[in-house]
Image (cartoon, helix red, strand yellow):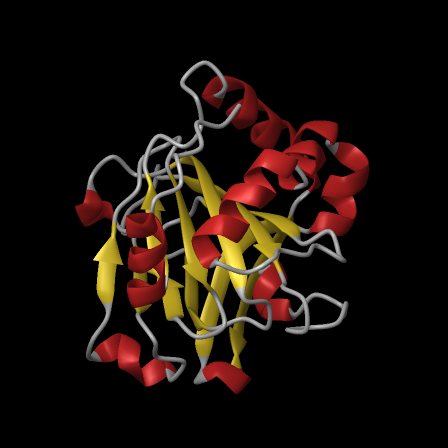
Length: 217
């Protein structure tokens, strides 16, 4: 289902330097409709969230989300993809650290209303792989990732943030805990941004805990 890139030191070096690594066309073309169909099937189980994270500088959460506790029981496809040994091995090689998944930390996040956004945050778990099944065609329509390399301070997003645009089938790897990040709001009606977020921890980095609100939403 995935076209995993061959490991090179350049991939590791970019991820280490930026805290972000783009993985274009990560989902194979013939697999994208299957994964998109699965996300759309599961969307009926998702919960609409619209609130502000006061602990994160009044960071808004406006999206529809479905957490791993539901995905694990409803989708063998996504659960299998999340724990795929080839995928885990490639992430471990790029990050240069063994990957653990003591909890089922996979989430679907869907932005589909004007103004939907995933506001500024960092996360407790260190690594996240994000896979897109839908994304706005025009970067001017929003839904862009903004991230600040090696800056856990959310205010850095207002001064040194970089922007990344992604297409359906693309993926990226993010150092979640030390890279402040957010998703820019959708700017008009009729747009959709749907992404799978696969989060992983590492040995000695974090014991299994209940997923945080920022992870789920």
